[in-house]
Length: 213
Image (cartoon, rainbow, N blue to C red; front, side, top):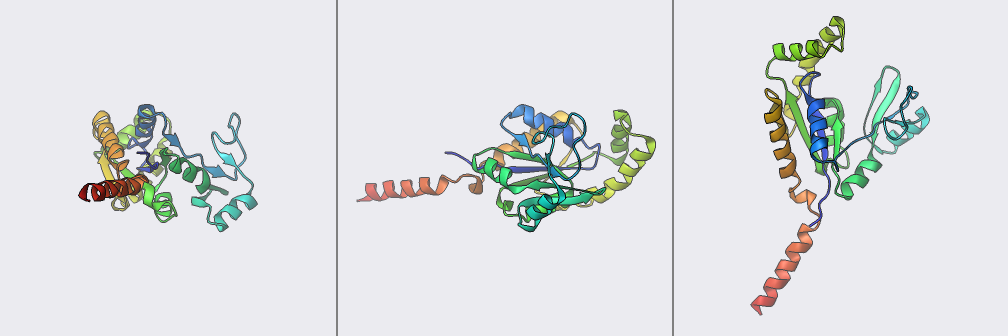
């Protein structure tokens, strides 16, 4: 039987391993895709419209928000960012999962959207705060000041763990990824994800009635 796709939300404080898990998930199932966000900021060198972002003017972005066609949106550093509903709905109806790498605020908006019945939300925790800091430092991507800001923000993000369907402690990447795959495989079998289930049950009922006569 065909299935509907899942809207998979992954959230975590920076350094907990969310992005690595997301890319592993996409390598595991190439049919899974990242949601392409819309933004009002100008494209940077090398960015491609529809691949990196969907670039829009502010009036068009606000019109989508007003018409209820954004699953989630935010205003960050003078620009708007958001997730248009139409391409996500199209993917879900076609049986393709869509992955969102967003924070708890975006997750809350999506969980109250028109597609809420197809949402799978997962929060990734570090094994300890000391390990979280070690991972941020070992990436060698940020200044000490940036790392300090990320650490200060991390507790606010962690405090919203209870709003998610599943919580994974990423103490071992391979083990955590195995758990993530198990969750996704199980959630794909939810009743809401199987549109052919009710017609199939009716066919069984008809067959049963025929056998009983």
